[in-house]
Amino acid sequence: MKGLAPIAAVVVVLAVVPLVVHSNATLNFLIVTLMIALAGQGWNILGGYGGQYSFGHAVFFGTGAYVTAVLQVRYGINAWLGFGTGIATGALLGAVIGVLTFRSGLRGSYFALVTLAFAEVLRIIASVAPITGAGVGTLIKLDLGPQAFQFQSRAAFYWVVLTLVATSLLVTRLVERSRFGAWLIAVRENEDAAKSLGVDVRSVKTAAMIISGAMTAAAGCFYAQYFLFIDSGIAYGTWISIEALLTPIIGGVGTAFGPLLGALVVKSLGEGAKLVTGDVPGLDLIVYGGALVLVIWFTPRGLIGGFLQVRKWLKRRARPAVSSIPEARHG
Image 1 (cartoon, rainbow, N blue to C red):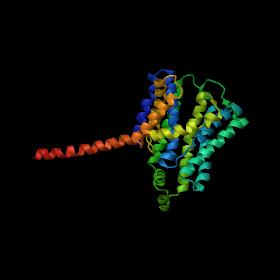
Image 2: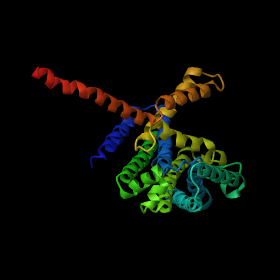
Image 3: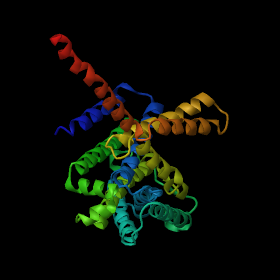
Image 4: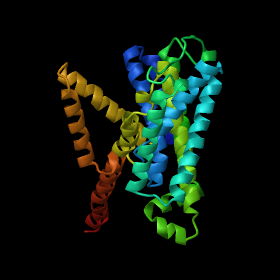
């Protein structure tokens, strides 16, 4: 329970935001930020805890988005059922990719490039396949109502995506405190040593890929329901793969709250850069990229890692002062 208290506190604070903030622009910013945090948490399970860096998490995001959209548009399946099916398909795809890559012994840069290749292959297929709308994309019919997973208020979407993020935080915390989490970290630190100690490395990495795929697919499903449109460039584009890996790296890779903090920082920097540069084309990207480089430069272990280092340093500084007090009194 002690480990769940911070999650409960953060979720409660975030849950009251729509009650005090009524700006649609602000809520839209927070909704997109939480969606990116959800995708980042999916990457974090595999890359942060498992040490398997993926450059192609768009493969799960896009598959989740297309499954939930196509099931509604082509087959008339209920949006909520389509949403759940999209998440399950992401998990299944994670299992397939995990078996194919880890059975081949791929790791490091080879694994990263293969995941990127999977995303690119699916992007090409989605851009020409009739079932996905080919180059036109898939547009979900507007049908406002909870039964269609469509809400008039942005606050409702906010609470839905916050629930998904809270679930991902809970799953991550449970992984951290489980035997599976210990195996996963052992694989990250030294795969060969973990194998010599009896850890089933292939199964552990595949399980991490399944969890990662499900979380990232959930973000894709939510994207489809929120924007009601998806095409190959959005679904399998490099933008989501970059943001999914960038947010935990900025916030703190291998930590439960790293993706959430990283998403807030990354999206805030992006919007701040646009406000500062105005309408000058491309300048906002230069400012945004420069700010991210500085963040990574000064906090290579992420913002949470930097905070922990500062706290340790302050404790070390405080110890000599505390230990000198009895000596002064004795004198």
